[in-house]
Image (cartoon, rainbow, N blue to C red):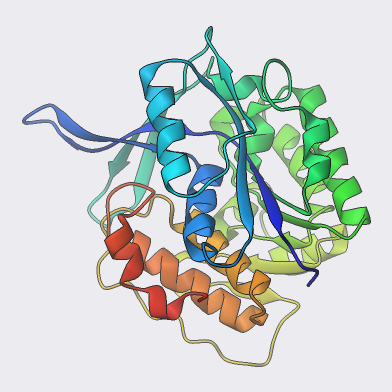
Length: 312
């Protein structure tokens, strides 16, 4: 894999409400979003590797937005490509969990600042040409205006053509798309640009029932594929002969952010010279730690508890 020094993580961050207690009316307030979650974990994993993690997004000029950006910078994320708009606010989402820790989301994001990314004040698409790697998700594609979405896909194609790394997670949120056909078409165009494809089996089953994701995405042009199967661990394509042990989590409190953490563990391992099997094990170890905590981003102490299993 070519040497990567700068990664552009393109997406949205929202105000996160978790652990709501109906008896007291209290909830934990945090900041999260699928690409942002991965960016945070990448920054932690690659802190001593001289690999710069940059976040591309747009937020407001309110106090919540100020705290978001300050928190990202505290994590070591470069925020020079985060736009600020006085006329927009961050979106909000609330997490509900069932007895098994499976999460459900409620969103308030229709007019969020991130929806104006590359279409107003803030970073421009041409800024991506400064990077040798890009990471984005199906949510990124969904929240962008259609013309901007197509231009971003074309930018990813150009980056791959010049030898760059393109990592994509087809995170499918039906509520963000006009219909499933629109989501399938846009994401398949993006999968065709991916050098690292990180789909979930559930998302693929929802959009392409009955299809095996590995061969399907390889036929589109994706180079290296890790299909996430939750607690069972990922399936790799091209397939490998080595058996990989994916131990279960000690406890499952909240599955929010587990897939995002897997992506970070996998990408970081590959960038630091590990093979695909080791990368899959590293991603699974981080996901296993995340599900034991509420919210998408676990405290640093919990992250440190699995450090020996992650890229060093």
